[in-house]
Image (cartoon, rainbow, N blue to C red):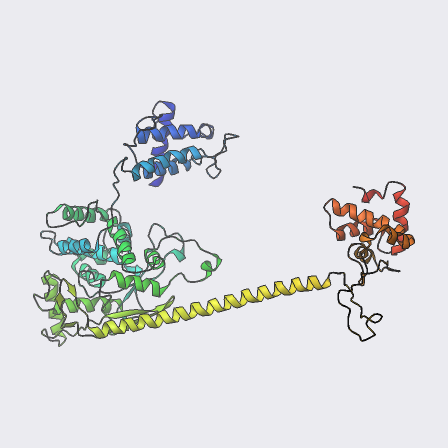
Length: 608
């Protein structure tokens, strides 16, 4: 399907470029596609957005939006022979859609849209929570719709609960559901047909919870739909035809949105995708972290190597998001009466059938289905005046892959009848305190874990800094230094052993007799050995006093100094000398060889 849309856009672009139309089944050659330049793409985009291939500076994009141009850019790029290569303006080759000029056209259209100077967006805005409840009321009270209203209600509540697309709901199968082993009273669902699902790890197991509000209860609405649909058992899909079933839901919603009983809280277009946007927005506004909403909505994220091996399912973030989307009072239907899915779905049906008439402003369950359930219940010895199904609110606690659904018993309702005050549901103070205690407990656990991680990180950094300091100290300790000796005053001070103030004896200018290697010989020249004066600081008189040794060593010092001045280190220079003459020779023989080669212009490998 996408290939056909892409091909039509390419045909439209090539027709604009050539000046005549092409047949729909034409296949363009590689040479023809390689002739396309960024200017051709820019002229076509300008024509689509501004109505002119070369628009003026003050022209407004009144024909197309930036999203349309980006989609067209993606379509043309998919046919380019070098689609992964950015356009090179020097060699004039590459993918023409991946060029700065094409991006500049799209950015210009975006700036105009921000200033409300372009085409008005036809995108569907997120539905508000109040609008969603109003929509469910209109669906429940839909007259003349028959069992279709129960299908639409089940689709909308499940789509809201899973932050899913309408296409995901139409392709949802019965085998996508399973019973939760660890949390009876809830279901596990996997959306394997979603748009972003390409690997097994992209389809995590997600929990489906009930709700204290029957309008939002995904379990109750799913059970009613299955019971009221005769063909449900004949099809593997939950909501019927996966090909055009979404059209039925769209037409139903269009009738509701255009009706006089539906009240919009803000301007903007509403559609099936508004449910997905609205659920994500509602979750963020109620305090859910963005990562939790992202996991619940199954948006694609970057993965590392470890993600290939570990399970992508994170029960706690997923259940937290599910609990928030179940309504202000959180999830319900936490009864430990069995683990089979039939029993899980039968419990909300039995509760809805035994709710006293007039408890709600709308019909929770069809009258025919209610009579059938009550007759079956009376047949096994039950009493119609007693609702044995207790709805117990739960509080979602845990961390990461650890999930606990804690029952919270309160006095919010009696026999399924909820107290309504100021348009909302009131909860007992004990439940609020219980929820706050759990929130504070896990908050303290997270803070403790963060504190321990910070301590370990600080310890590691401190050890690293200590190692650096020790390395610097060792390096300084190994360097030869000039030591100044302060002798004791014995001649003029009467031999009392007190150092004469201000008297300093300078280091003596002497050369070592038998240096062990060339490194020591260079240290004698640069730093001095054993507290003696460095040879490079000798005066003329001091050089004369050490004339024999100084003159024979000077040729070595000159060679190393020449290498140092050109950018080499002294160690590298000495290694070059050893490589030229060999390390088996003594220092005296190497100095003699250096003096001999000096008369011939130096050793070939030591010439600069």
